[in-house]
Amino acid sequence: MQKRLLSMFIIPMMIAFVSISFSSCKGVKDSDLQTSIETALKANPDLSSLAVTVKDGVATIAGECKDDALKAKCEELAKGIKGVKNVINNCTITPPPPAPAPVEIAVDDPLMKAVADATKDFPTVKAAVKDGVITLTGEIKKANLSKLMMVLNTLKPKKIENQLTIK
Amino acid sequence: MALQDKYRELVDAATASGVTALQVREQDSILYIDGEAPSGDVKDKLWDIYGKIDPDFRAGDVVMNINVSAMAAGSRAKVTTEKSNLNIRKGPGTDQPIVGKAAHHELVTLVSKTNDQWWLIRTDDGEEGYAYAQYLTVEG
Image 1 (cartoon, rainbow over the protein chains, first blue to last red):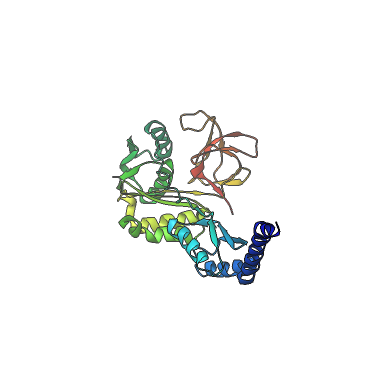
Image 2: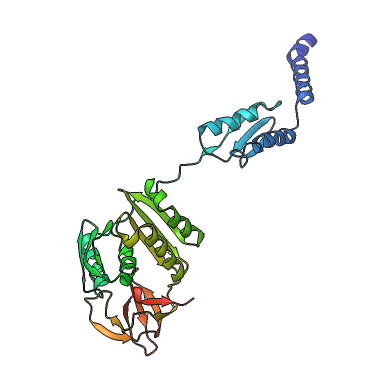
């Protein structure tokens, strides 16, 4: 009976006790691990903004990485620290910046009206609009050219073809 | 990229002189430069540089849409026509009937912006209507 109790209860308890004392003896404090991982990440400017927490030797990394390679890299760095048992990699990949919006080109009807407004005070200038392209013909005084161009350039044309004769 | 090189001085000057919301895009071999200049002087300076790189604006490879951010509702603006009065119209368009006039160098109040070309303005006599933004200059 006693022998049975020993094998069923005491031996597993002893094993548990030994293993606990063994691991706690060998284990590094979580806070020290966290400092070591943070130091390793700070050395790389692409990883320096990541946040690390360590609990029972398991490191959790969070934050934004530029790409998959950097995400793998931070995990590798943390795993390389002695005493880290496992790494939970919660890093997200920063989405690439959106492509610049295409240039907005005015449609011909309102553009034609706006061009008529802009050229009203320059009766010697003729302007035609087709597919967003303003074509200027006729004559203009040199002093007025930039005034006219300044306004036409704000009308969102595709292009301005200046064929004016400059006087 | 060749266009960006050709007009680099212009874009650099825009950046250096505090143009906000600056966008430089190349599309179908035309360089589109958009932004808000802090003052009319900055806008004029950028146009000088543009005119130096492309004399008389013949190349047709740039559309430079630079507005002056100082033009804001509530501001006072001077009528900067060459010498004539500025027409005040019922609506935003030269096809709209004229409802009043502002004298050359008169100060008016900017009420609201319709678009980059037309502003609703009010004169000190209480006349209200639309005027062409090109002839209005906010004094800094």
